[in-house]
Amino acid sequence: MSVGRLRDVARTLFVCTLLAACSAAAQSNLPVPNAGDDEWKELGTTPPAYPVPAALMKFPTSWTAHEVLIDTATLNIAADAIVRYTLVIKTAGGAENVTYEGLRCETGQRRVYAFGRRDGTWAVARNADWRPIEDTRINRHYFEFWRDLFCDGKTPERRADILRHLPLGGRPRQASNPAAE
Image: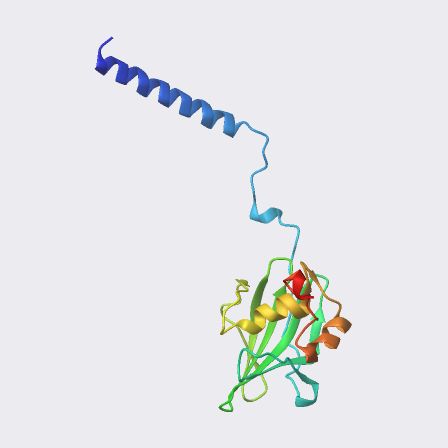
């Protein structure tokens, strides 16, 4: 057989093998992921009453000079397992940022539902997509909320436990080095 003929036979075998593999995959009984099949559904939410100073509780953290405060009146764990809360960040320079947010323990994600205005009203967030929580300096509080305060693994903590641990900066954590205990 000539080299050209061997090449043609090899190509034909390759194409036949590829087609057989595709056909077998198309006929398999493996489920195809479908975004519509997700059983979890987020409940609708509207921004709560604007925070009042008496309901704000400081979340102590060493990562920033800013004050990180949670409005305890808005802290809620709904049936969709999302921890919703109003967050107030007071900067060292006197600025104040107010947001109504949600944190999903199961996926380690967060989202902003609304931004607070100076007049005490809310502006609904235009981009309210779920975002992964990352351990970065600028967003360290979200990571600490997820790891130390709002979640017990993939499950939300009870509201009473969150309120108890909030002024402590979260739950006491075990030392990561067993020899250090």
